[in-house]
Amino acid sequence: MKHKRYVSIGGIITCETGLRIGGRKDATGIGETDLPILRHPISGAPYIPGSSLKGKLRSLLEMKYCPSTQSSGKPCTESPADNDVAAMFGTADMKGVTQPTRFIFRDAFLTSEAEKQLRENLPGLLAEVKTEIAMSRTQGKTEHGSLRESERIPAGATLHFNLSVRLFEEDEIKARHKGYFQKLAEGIDMLENDYLGGSGTRGYGKVKFTTNDGKPLSEYIRNLS
Image (cartoon, rainbow, N blue to C red; front, side, top):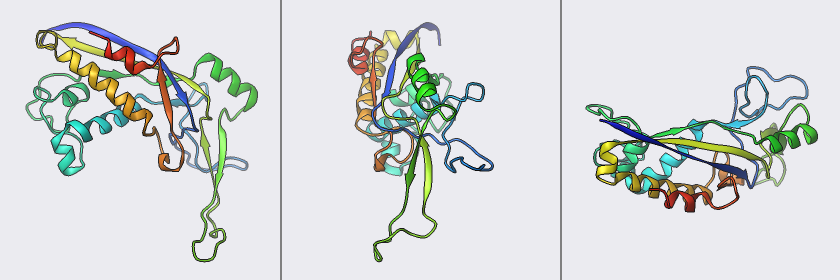
């Protein structure tokens, strides 16, 4: 396959509700939460890993465009030669696959303005702490031992979003790249109506994607060629 060009797509992710992507903590100290979020190991600032963005977009599009996922609920096994989503994100069945994945997702880091606000308003933690409990349905009171505290990137925080699309000669000869862009735009629309990260059915993880000048990112992507 002959490589032709890269297309860079960037913008802003805005957290419309608190967003949680869990991090690891071997032990909990006094005053610390038992459910921390993922943080940059040097700055301590929360971020969204590219794997989370890729995985969520991929799963949403596979449920619509990959028959193997629709029948099994597992990752797509279609051939990248025949299925745009498999070409965009990769396939679970790599036997005989000779072509590379088209999409390269980058980690999404806080914008400078968002990081400044978090350091001023939530010093040290750079996140909100949400307290949750479980209620007994039969007794109408709190379940014993159910109190937990979860960290979240707070609503209103903004992060830089970027991915790189690598296109090959056959993509442009067959105009397949236009299908990639259309499906990516559709996936972003779907994600805005779904959620990113954990606990989405309980209000977490509603996000919005825009260009750097505030326009809908999906509209911009649909106009790419």
